[in-house]
Length: 159
Image 1 (cartoon, one colour):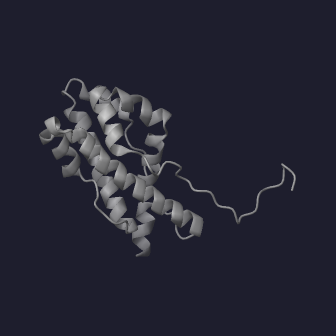
Image 2 (cartoon, one colour):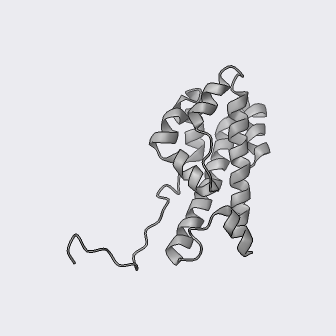
Image 3 (cartoon, helix red, strand yellow):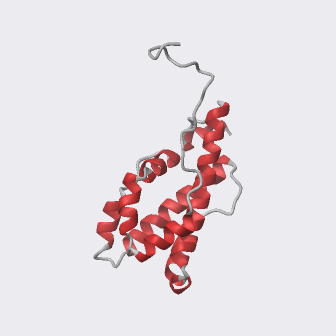
């Protein structure tokens, strides 16, 4: 086969390459850099685009939530992340992914009340655990050809 000929339809690649992100480590680094780490990681690591694809819509950019968080002592940023976590939990349940899941209260609670006990790292660990499992499920569906391209709304309609 020449380089110009299209590849066969039999070979399907996974859409999500990063299904094993170390959430606790990422949360710990982000905590000690006061959120600056995710300002770089979200766009450069492709995380923002992956979250958009998993949730089926464009989410507010992290840098915007970060900037709006500065005058609110980062309460805005925390609520933004908690909302994303809740949407991710709902998506995981729709796909039938096994828990434990991240959630609004898990993200918010660990960041507020667990601050001295590495709470942000624990919350981020659960968030990435859920994201990793959802992306792995979407990869397996795409490779098997069973609804890998379905949006959350389309998935609900077929149930």
